[in-house]
Image (tube, rainbow, N blue to C red; front, side, top):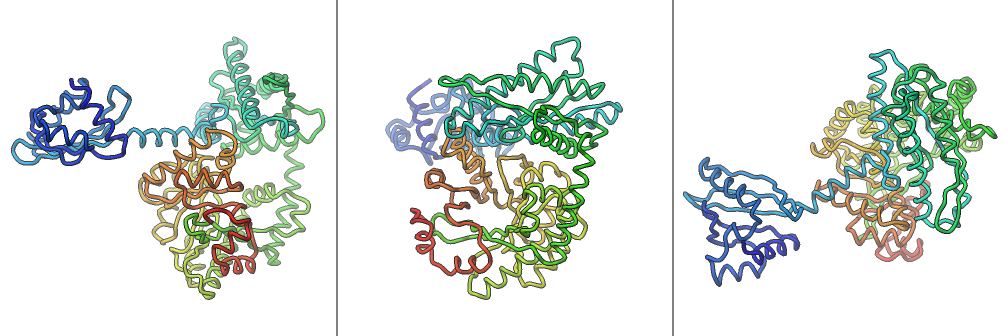
Length: 573
């Protein structure tokens, strides 16, 4: 085996080129169509010195020769991938050329494979703690519910919030904050592993622990006898998490509160069980001295609160009290706003007493999110029509679609009507669907995405990296863009994991031929890193804050240089 020849192949492929050779059925090389200059020169100097035997390692040669013989025998081309001894993955395409000649094309797929693997890890794993993420949690919880439904058994969901963490915000570096979370995750694993091995804790066997939010962990107990079983586990976990965290230079005290929901009494689907455990957890956080709360203890009060808020939301819709703001997505290369995302603004009477997250949750639970969403769609299209009339022919408008909207009756017809009556081209409308939504509503999501694409609108996966959407959506050409989740962009200022994740997401988007938009860009360092990795479209307060319709028109009327000056002279924008 001729090692220098192999090195020449690797050097060429590292540079991103394809190796194209004409070979005989015996593996002799008769011509070099495309290769690095060193290999081409060597072939010209001594053609007989180069063969398949010398270009690839011994373990790869047998398969290559077999493919050459098969292609000639069957008079048809063949393609295969092969992992070589150095870990590189190569794609071989063999095409017959005449009676005893073949064209062989070789491409290095190593980086592409790594990017896809990284994207898969991103979809299911939290990179700080190594725990499964929320998407994995929901997938497994659905399976647990189905099993217990058939067995008529019981399960429990325990959500745990770690508090007093932000008290150290200025004292702890980003790396130290990650270390605290990683240590907490390790404690939970160890605690569950101990109890899983206990003869008295059979109900905990196969328990699932995940990181479901920044300071939130979730445990699923697939099979329990009573609520006391779940309470005992929650107590042990909370006690373990409350022990001081020892870092190199300091000790950090952590508080923990947990909420428990039980199947089937507190919910018969994954979303209900999870949200009810969260509601109980929030009650435990608000109640001084409480570490653990069951959902059943607070459900009546929360139901009354939701009823009052629902009435306010309906009244606001009837009275026309809602408004829209617009957040630009900017093309870094030109500084031109490419899309204006419509953001719903609630009336002050509601916001004054309730957090926005709770308002959204209540709107979704009660179904009023559907008429609100249609109001947003209609008014966003009307605004785009006005911008067109003002001469802004290239800007698009984006709207978000909730789960209830996606599966509601008449959704497509309502969208068609809004487009038709406002004269907006469907191709100028972006519909943003959260990645977690596509994962949760997989079957319905496929149908809705197909119908939306058939209508001509542009589909965008929002919060990419915070959930997991089936690659089949991408493979079938239904998705045209991804918005990389702001939590990943925020991490660009803190750790290399986020940089690697961004690179993987951008590489995946490039391979799939879709746009990638980074959301939540707030620092110049984040912008520079994104530019360095080839991200073209960004959204965030660094480039433009949400603005009402009048301010948005003024923004669009300003040239890119003026927008850059208004935002402090950002380079490249």
